[in-house]
Length: 82
Image (tube, rainbow, N blue to C red):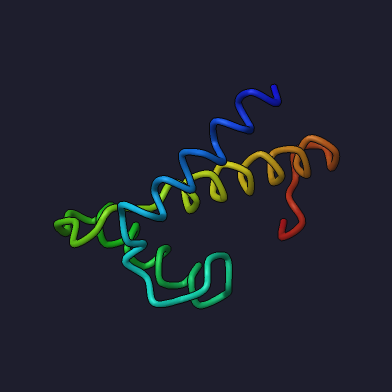
């Protein structure tokens, strides 16, 4: 598993050098989340892509989804907002 973690770090480092994030905000800040969530919503609704979605955003969304499913599993299938 540590080999995958190392590879992921290398990919993120390369991505940051060759592909601008397209966001003027600090990664993982509330503003950054708002910016990318809005971009992804527009893409999902058929807008053309002005910039690429960073791998860091996709990884963070996957991580949050895993955490949310773990929360639902421990609460009998109900999330905290239900």
